[in-house]
Image 1: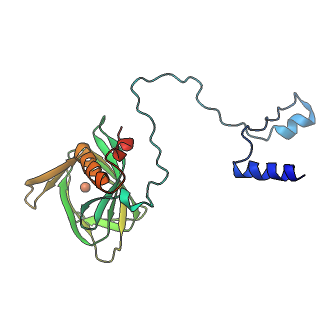
Image 2: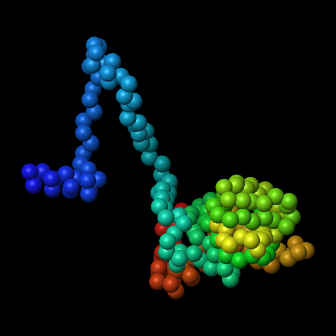
Image 3: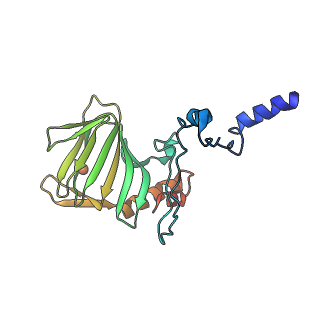
Length: 208
Ligand code: FE
């Protein structure tokens, strides 16, 4: 009995049995068939498994909003980003942008589209009359030049951005003052992680 209890506890602790119990097959006709016909079939994986040479491996990040503060890479006082996918093969990057202060954060032009999803707080662009609020999605068109602002009542904002190509930083007259692309983002991550204990190679796992 004691062994049986131990076995049950062990099974629960390790996520139950290592093998799934066999599925009951419907009987050909009769009451048994009617009773089992209501059970939906298990989903089946794709069977073909055609090899795709050069396909980068999947990237799965369980803690996209990390508990470890070291993952946030500072770009300015109280402004940081958390890299998710740095896609050098396609020239874009996915990251979370976090801002913990109000004010004008960056004025920039986009040569390619940007997609954003607001996870926390809110922000807006001086050039538009809409506000990107928690739960909202934003599309930024190629050619857009705008000035990101976080208002004083916002304690913290976090937004998921997919940025294609580059961010070109400009002054109020549109004169270029700097830029970011997936490669400068990698450089910033590498430099930050090299000094905070995560290691110079830590960023490599997010590169595709
Ligand atoms: Fe933008």
